Amino acid sequence: MIENRLSEIMGRKRLKISEVLEGTGLARNTVADLYHGRAKGVQFETLDKLCTYLGVEVGELLVHEKSTEE
Image 1 (cartoon, one colour):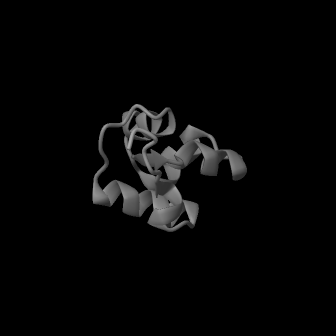
Image 2 (cartoon, rainbow, N blue to C red):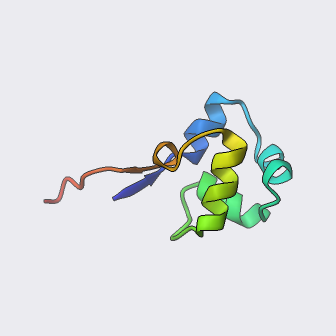
Image 3 (cartoon, rainbow, N blue to C red):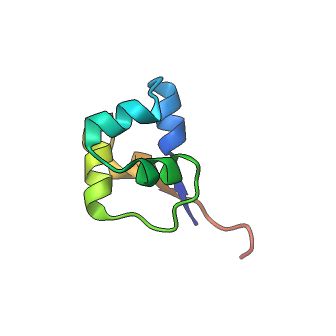
């Protein structure tokens, strides 16, 4: 399972969704859905903008967690 760590990273950096919107130019729904874990997918352009703005690598933003169902 791929785990999205946007809210964790934003919390560490004390960033609000509105600040990320201003810094990236992304749509509010896109950032809010990622932040709240509701997103079903994400575009490479979105990942690029978030990683650039937050100063992180993709592997910090999205993490592969092994499923416990195996």
